View 1 (cartoon, rainbow, N blue to C red):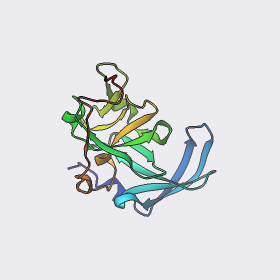
View 2: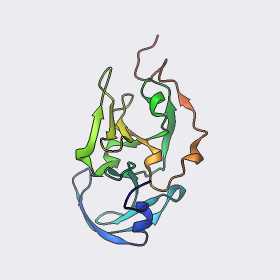
View 3: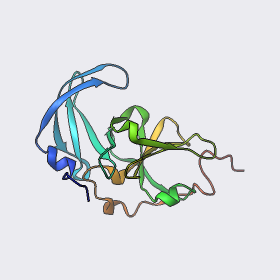
View 4: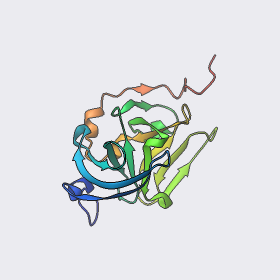
Length: 177
């Protein structure tokens, strides 16, 4: 249970705030944003700036120290579990997000990176509460895998049917003959 705060989405419901900064392609974002509801009743910010409106889901660790904005133009993509040595221990259902569609908006300093084996994949977790939030994929370094259980308002029970990728014996980046 979070101490001192209710769910972030409920705190923000109906509120607006200033949205300033830069997009991944370095164009500026200036305007207002308001909270809406989207995928599986997840909360997202609708950014109203110099571009057309974009849905952005909020993802966070358990203690709230790390917060990500996920731009998912086609919803949750490539949902999977994996049975490789690290994923089988995490047990997370992950979705793919292009690098430019994930923005760390809070807690970059408290994220800890873990790598092993080829050191291509980079796994990130909150150094305060220990929750795995995302990783840079080994099989496609242009994407992150995100822990969908961290998406605000998403019900993980709706994703129990997601199958396993055989990363233990046939990882897509391994040269298997």
